Image (cartoon, rainbow, N blue to C red; front, side, top):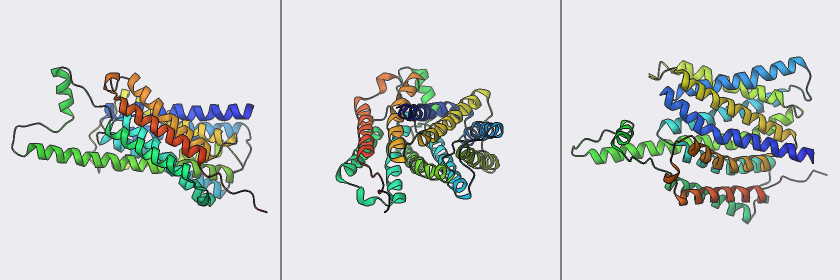
Length: 345
């Protein structure tokens, strides 16, 4: 019973941290006026929480498990997938996407990727039954509904309209301007979808790969976390710092934006720790990740509304219904997903 409660607590920790991750990161990106600089802050937070802290704990006392080349490789791959997913979220927000619909799309598609990859790694595709496929369809339909009925900003006064216009294409009464505006919106829409797909596939692969790495290191909790932090440091700190000048980044290092971005990175690292703890308590990618990805978009929406990104009046009932469909689809995938083969003779 205690192990089950520990499993639920670890899953809740991950869902809460990753559910709030998007809105907090959106604040950081808006304050720094950059997509690369918040990514650097996220990587620094991972380095502090997922590398320095676990190394200190390992130095003070032993932990079950041991280092292994296979475990390090799989855990580094998990960290790489997590970092690429974070990059996808940052790019989607940078292309004009809003966390209130970007994150539900990511968390709606990720459990599907998680289940299919887990089935591939366990050679359990023959266990994909009709209810599981129905769950996949529900997730897709719910994601499309979320995207179509995503909340729109409301301009009630002239100043608000002026602020909104500062982030849009300049509206000049020239011939051909509507076509150019539509073309620009379509281009950004596709970029948001591509960046969201990167996050969805990366975070969908995160759980199965991390579980394989943790298993190869004897169920260790700190060692896989260290590998994840190292991967984040390489991808989310060194690479963006090297690209700031070549890409002509015009952002700033404001204290407010850095604090918000560091907070987002801290939430991501704590969510990674929650996932590792859930696996250590006996959870499997088939069960842990769909539950996390099913609860996270709901928490994301509540956090976004609470942080005043979007007024409650702007949230359409169809949008909420889409999120519910995504959650039901994720639960169906969880319930009827493959469980792997029985032990060999």
